[in-house]
Length: 284
Image (cartoon, rainbow, N blue to C red; front, side, top):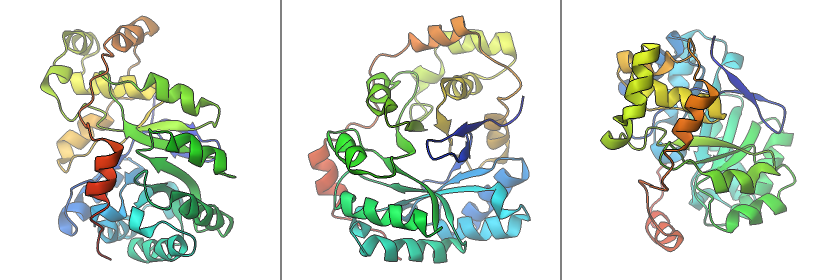
């Protein structure tokens, strides 16, 4: 088996496994992490304006020697960039920071601000060839349906917290009719010890000669979820990616599905999200 891809509702094929660079500092640390990922065959990099490391991602992509068409770059707009005309300017600035002619996947990072105006500009950017696919992140309130119904181009992905303790079954039902797929941040439950050390994962790890983390990531892959675990350690990165040479049985998948207990690791109300996150915005 090899790296898997998912066909999105717009016809593009996204690499299902990637590298996330949230909280990795701009500069050599991000550049080296992305270079290491690309060297070992990872072809999906997930960044955001809010991460403040887009320039380093773009630098690594250029230095890697890998053809740009083989690499999938995801980035995200922050709410202060939402709005017609304003969002298009923000996209142009993103392209400049990433030093690329197009963005593979552009997301709205948060579910507040003028997201409807921003979506109109994102659809224009697709038509202009500046962006290939568009989607949303952290939209779990009624605003999810609002933007999906208003959209001419339906969101291709929805990036949210998703892991064996919080499998997002209801959310998946809500987006099914739009053809939208789940991308997981916190695929390992924010590294929760109880989750990772679940006896079921230990048992399956012994059976397949894999670590508990590899079993969890493999479960995500077979569930059709897109994942991009964050690490700057090349050995951890290699281990995370080494999940395409075994396959869980349907019975084993169902056993893992049975671990769903509704436990989230990020619990912030929409009101607090808007108040706290909305008070901050990234620099250029």
